[in-house]
Image 1: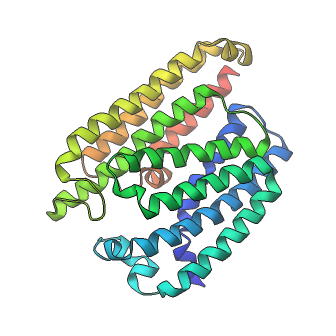
Image 2: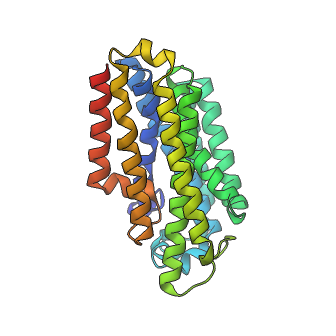
Amino acid sequence: MLIWLRALRLGQWSKNLLLLVPVFTAHEFHAAALGRVGLAFVAFGLVASATYVLNDILDLEADRLHPRKRHRPFAAGDLPTSHGPAGMAVLLALGLGLAALVSGPFLLVVLGYAVLTIAYSAFLKAYVLVDVFVLAGLYTLRILAGAAAIGIAVSPWLLAFSSFVFYSLALVKRDAELAGLARRGDADAAGRDYHVADYPMLSIMGIASGYLAVLVLALFINTGPVKEQYTYPNVLGLLCPVVLYWISRLWLKTSRGEMVDDPILYCFKDIVSWMVLAAMIGITLAAM
């Protein structure tokens, strides 16, 4: 059982906290909305774990060559690969069943996430840049899922901001992997169309995308709906330097080789990222 818990990658469930973003942006702080998002969190996590099992089976040989991924249950031989399909089927059935209890639109978003993730694991991750677009899309789908769970529409401004931010973070992930390859003396990423020499160009694209997210935020703060929704909308302008600092710091950490493969999980363990989040919440409350 403990081995299967490792295979589920429960630590990755922290990414599903993105389902709460629409709750906060729409100010839906009531028990019904939070309860539905809580159920949606579990449903999304189960479906995501099912796709992680598939990914680990498909990436078996590459993972065994990786300094950290070789310790994953399937790569290490702690779980037979023959057990993977059955485990994946059970997780999908449970996850989709719970998703159906949340709402029909939420179930559709979760199905879309599952299909896109399976396509990514099967072949899309082998194509340069296509993989980072897909990863950014998978993060954004979590925000759409949160909105579907509580029955609200997502602002196009939020979609634009999240798309640029998650594209930047997806490139952080690739850059961190390439930096690791460089330290080990490898020239290419196994199973992916990336070379260590791509690092400078990917950094430029990622930094630019992160800064575009800040520009979108600055433009959004000056829109009519914001001025109607907040008592002191000008206070929200303080969010821009805070987000700019956070993006810049992540890329600086990446350039120093201090970033782990997954920037989202890095942020959950990073005290400065938590301080940035606290500052953003404080600024938003002050504006309200």
